[in-house]
Length: 249
Image (tube, rainbow, N blue to C red):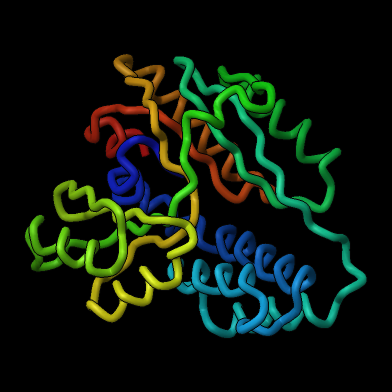
């Protein structure tokens, strides 16, 4: 999940994410299986699989789990095909949402997403209604460690990133989606500790949330969406006080 302050979201939601680790690993396994079924199990020739493996590693998914998912995808070509879908919608307060799904049955996923939105103060939008508010990027949320802002900026830019945003003891490093693997490798070489690494969406325009009850509704809706096995990621364009994120997450 990502709001305006990507690193703040990652930091304050980390405990909640840890509590859902089994479900996260299940979603990552689905991504791996889908990538193998589409392009085979060779990391050198299947870039989608390579991206999926790198994301799984960044989430600390055990090596055995990764290998098991790849073998399952390679050995079960008769299984239902997965398709990637992106739904657009709104959370309470008019906050824009991009809901990225990986599903074997869109006739199940679409009504589930619509129901969750409408029963949590949001609504489903039409195609193109909010997508223009986001940009697709390589996104790395990292721990500052002993580095100061200038040092982290230097590390990020030397790794090939376009921008580095420092917030307290974490930083968001972003770059071109085409440079994901190169940037990740360079950051690892520099000894940077990663909290997350993905190709995903960052908001270009934001919606400021000034009411705490609305903030609570937004976070509850996103949590409910993310509990859906078909939903891989939810991206939002809200801005709210970090204190609220910490209290309500």
